[in-house]
Image (cartoon, rainbow, N blue to C red; front, side):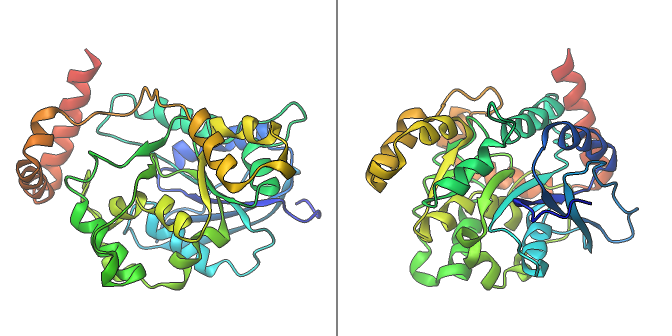
Length: 312
């Protein structure tokens, strides 16, 4: 273990150990700065492997109920993390996406983007948060997406979470963007509201839901929470432009303009909602309710059939 003070903390939810083994290799190969590791995993699961690297300062594990996907475990770990050697964190999880034929490629893209380094081997996400204190969250490249059109199923859940966090006056959500994929760099101070407020009661048991849960709603609100703390959200594509700009002379307005100007909008993994469902969101919600009540065997059959069709 490294005795130097950690520069940041990685929060990783390990639901799929075999995927975590692959991700570990990237952490060992790429990270050349001292870091802490906080792992969450399902109750009764085997202890997760830790990176075999001299840059690892310390590692902790928490067993959590299988609720709230990677979101509720992350919130629990944030609340339980008392050491807080750094305000900077990196949220990762063993993203599987069984309903998508490109799920593994998507996860690898997310991780590769968040683990990008500069010419000196320093992680760009950490460097940006360390230098620019007006940024509170950094999504993977091309994954700071517009929320418009992605709330057909989650609209009610988003409003419910906002009310729990900010009161009834927040029912009409003003959220504009979200960090797709639920992996991102963050400043702990930007998520303080989520640490302070109790939302665990909102998370349902896992039954293979593809959407419409409190976890899906909150995934779409991390950026909003950060912005309500007075901070900005950015994408990894913004890191080099911001770090290359004259920091002292850049106003908050200039910073926001630079983020907007250098965001990447071409996302090969974003699935557009067909026009029919946009026109008839109530049918989409009905379909989701039916799907959520299907037996697990039927859900698994649907997933496997869909992958076979997509793979042709």
